[in-house]
Length: 73
Image (cartoon, rainbow, N blue to C red; front, side, top):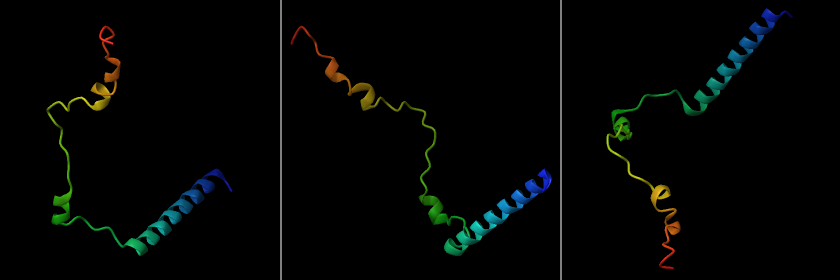
């Protein structure tokens, strides 16, 4: 078996395996269908926000116990 034959064999084998898998998935779940308008309207999509998101707990509140004034303790 030459290298070109081996490449062609492996490519055909891969395509057969993909086709078998596709047939198995279609047999179980059926063909893909697009969203209906009702389903499409239920999908929530976020857009880019032009405002600041604020700082989270990890930025502000997590290390507050280190801000002890030693003179009052």
